[in-house]
Length: 368
Image (cartoon, rainbow, N blue to C red; front, side, top):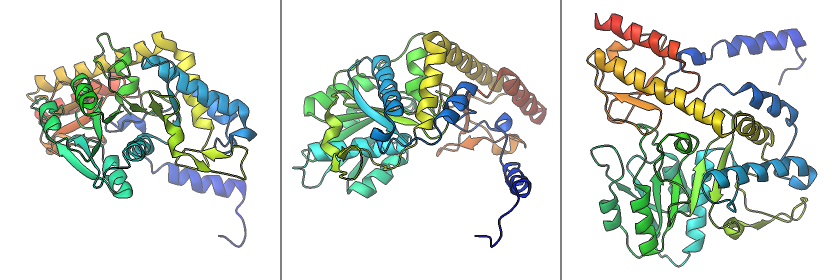
């Protein structure tokens, strides 16, 4: 800490210099986050000081969290779903596996079954919880192989995981088939829809992925991704409204005497931002946002293939991947690469049509 504080001008000059080192979203094509909607920013600022970790002090903010969960429960075909706002998909996935372990406490050597495309947060969760993680190979179209998954179930399997909107290829696993496996073996079935949960419901022909599928126990979704909320804001939803109570611990000095959340202090501001965007845009507005992102995804794929750069997959959501030489990507574009060395671009709301065209223009020049 400095002995003598800085003036306000000195401080914000310093902060501005550091902020200028961050990349601008105009050139970021690799992120599943985006610039927050102005409505989210305004709502966030109204609730900056709120702490959902002690909800009795902030009952109005707590009611917004409950309303956010209700909105998602209805969207995911389970109006009475339980849940709470998390810091994002990693926390949601850890909590889902905590639930699975509690409800199969008789397992001597518990294991979970995940697709090879599962987010790295499941490795963290397994390390923390002492679980064996069984990774299932993907089919040729980069989806979890349900038949192979069924073959890995044994008496110590406590959970099955499917992904709706994979991080690398934007695919939805065969959730209906996985749900049947979960029902057959009485498994906790968690769907990681951190990205796809705010895309798939707004598509013209949505694939089954939510509580409408028998066997789905819990769902993770991140409003700070396609929901355009401020960071951090995720949600964990459970089909049974009281399921999370099994994680309760005593909190005697707070305004509530028990809590099941992973974090103690929890910011209310991004929760208000998430709800504000959902209610401001409504179903029609979100459909328009998703429609635009999918249109840009298709345009990007068509444009790349015109230059002889084939798609690696035909995605279910707005993630495009290509068989492409890294030398063809020039600054200032920030892209990413999958484990299989495919070029990966996420067509988020900030990746407007003009950004797609500018990127394709640069690809065309490198092609020439």
